[in-house]
Length: 293
Length: 293
Image 1 (cartoon, helix red, strand yellow):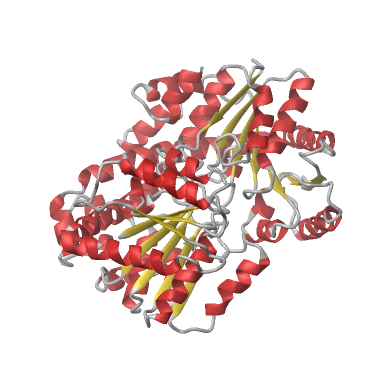
Image 2 (cartoon, each protein chain N blue to C red):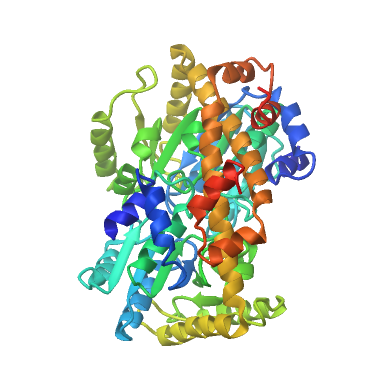
């Protein structure tokens, strides 16, 4: 399975045949996106969520698509050690996809990676990402449930609203709940959310104060995530989200193929025209896509 | 000019005509990419570079393509205040492009944005980005000179090597040079760089210890950036970099158009086929791009 993941995410020879084969098992897992700024404590929180799921006997896989993830080296040593506590548990799989070869953070290969993990039987798949603006694909188009993580004293509440996470979050985890400032952050978030229209058949986004450090509030966060999943099923919205995911997956496969083709069509003669200002990229691009250059 | 930037970066109606018009003035500025992890102090360092350029009478524009940038709200209040010191200087222009609408960090519209600023007469254009892995476009394909910023005690030296910045940096700024640990970080970087093959007609990447906080080392960093620019011109490598930039810009325009066309071809019937598992994204994507679906 680890090898199959490498083949599909790095688009090595044979990846298309593998993706085709694994697609047959797709749609089985509950996929959860964890997004938040660096410093919000996403990685430590994921560690807590993994431990909670294991305590219930579930298998869990984590795909980290964030160069600042504790899984990929962007964290302090203590974080990395905490995360390694699951390294010997066969019911847990963790893989960082934040390699330089990827164009964009979340990209076309995230779906293929999820299908591989679904085929391997992981019932819960967590995708860790910065989450807004930085990705080729919006995490809300990839997973069933979006958890936005913020922390007080980081300007994160403000940034969350500004960068558009208010629109995509199903559950909002406010980390570092040991700090007294969390109460105000939670109240601010609830206020802001109360102004937003209800979505997805009436789901009201939940706000969960948690502490990845002490574990405080983690059971409540887990319950919120489960409640959202149950809501998706009860309201029929799950099918809608799954169709949106499929549409995006298909569109990315198409864009990938066409982009490759486009690069092949650019010749030195075209670059001469641009360098000499006898044409411009918009005009020349238009000609090349309509087959007139 | 500010309005033109909005039109081209958000691809509003008329953006193609504007891009065409502004391309005529392209290639005039020295473009510098500043990349580094969150916490490396990129934004504060840019503030120092802007002040240094202004002291020499140059005009400077900054395009921040990083959701953790101090320009976009990801910083502590002190940083943001420092950055606002240039807000009333007509010789300085700053714009954050890290909005949710953008697919990826650096994307097709970065070139159009640079051309607008060149046409407006800015001689130095700084692009701030996370810089590796997160972007649709590699910053090294966008700018003339790449400055990689790291800071000791952040795992950044290690991460810089891991994530591929060693291959793209022309100048390496080691920030927080007030700390005694910087000496070791600089020595490590120099060691690692000495093992890399020389590129671009013999340029040996430089390592500059700096302190964005105190200003220590900033003149040296500026001199290194100037030296790289002079080297590009003297060695003839500037023309090569410019051709690489044009090639990437053209390819992005083409990919953008083709992807839009392909998205228009995806119908509910296609999603039904995927949801019902009577096809898969790879097979269906292949058919749609070859016009057989």
